Length: 114
Length: 113
Image 1 (cartoon, one colour):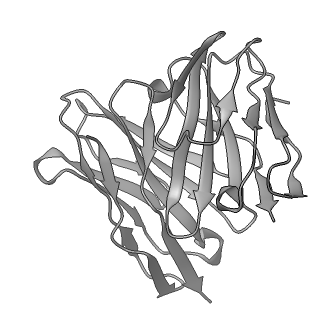
Image 2: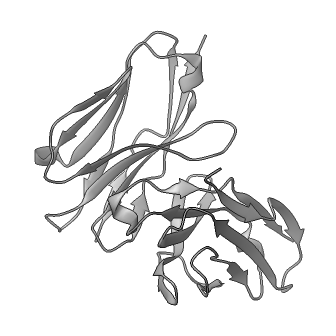
């Protein structure tokens, strides 16, 4: 089954404790992206990647890191999480460049930083 | 800079009524893409439609239709004969071709039985 898989789905952590949210897709997609969803703010793009070893900042990259060492994986790293990073996070992928087709989204990861 | 405005934060209609969700976008590019996504109460995000800036033809898919007007920079979404299953948050999105995709803040649609 074609899918984008995120882990963990739910996480409660404390300020400053490094964490990684993994994202993996099995569709051989070139494009991958991370979004955060907050009430009243919609979906905001954090980082995106057009291909292996190519990543770019979205609109809200501060406090996050990403890497794209393999085509299928695009982990989101919070080196020192803060309460303002409490949010619902979505990973997405697309066959080629993100604007040429539909985005396939993961189920979301709800992160709470205390 | 690109921007997407969904002025309707929340809409409630009675089942079987028609409802239109508004989307106004801003871009300086002549080539761009517009999208609509649906987020039902279960939380997943579902792609509904993509439109490029050179194709202003309206599109109909069952009870869903989309009206793209470059003159008013709008890409509105109409649900005809709404059903309770249409209750969701709907997002409009814009891409200028640089692989950044900007979403609007979403419109929460309640279909009342």
